[in-house]
Image (cartoon, rainbow, N blue to C red; front, top):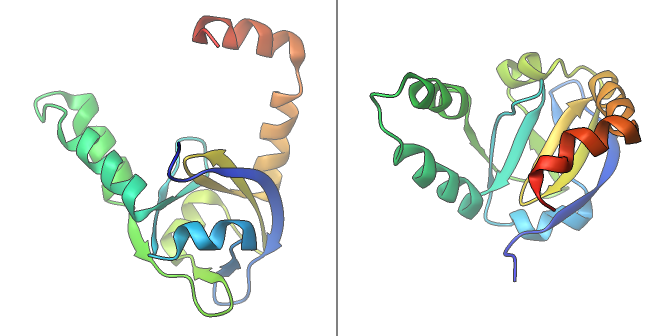
Length: 146
């Protein structure tokens, strides 16, 4: 059985301090805190502590002589922040991470299985449009052997 399972999408606003409400469905799974870091698609990635530790182990097992591995370490770890959910269910997204993802006043929170993605609304709209193209999806995902 999977330890964390995050599904669905939720539209939320950021307050003037950069706080974002985490959907109630996700809060219990993040009760020990969470790590927030840069995602791969102009978004942010929010992971439970245990999921981040798994990612940490996998990345740090990669050879530091491989330039791709070093670049991946920088992308993930230089932008990572341990965060807590406050008593009303919000996380504070640091300014530098809001800038990375282009977050302003609204965001879409997307459960993607083992982690959560946080998208600027406009970026998610573009991503969502891409995901609706059945012909492209068939070709693009065929090699994944689902």
